[in-house]
Amino acid sequence: MSGYFTIGDFVMIIPMALAGALFLGAVPCATEFRHNSLRIVGAIVGALAAVALVETLPVLM
Image: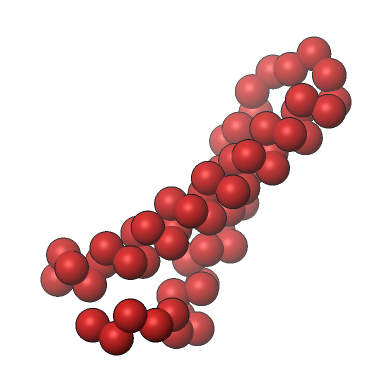
């Protein structure tokens, strides 16, 4: 286990961030500001989930 990110690890971050933005962006809201805020929060949560997944995969193998 090297502990460093490789370019292959970053391939997972962008799709997970996009999935989080789409998932929380689908929540119905009254204002456009809240809708965009949920998209941003979803992208951050998705990226953090991808980092956590990439970091824990070597432990599981």
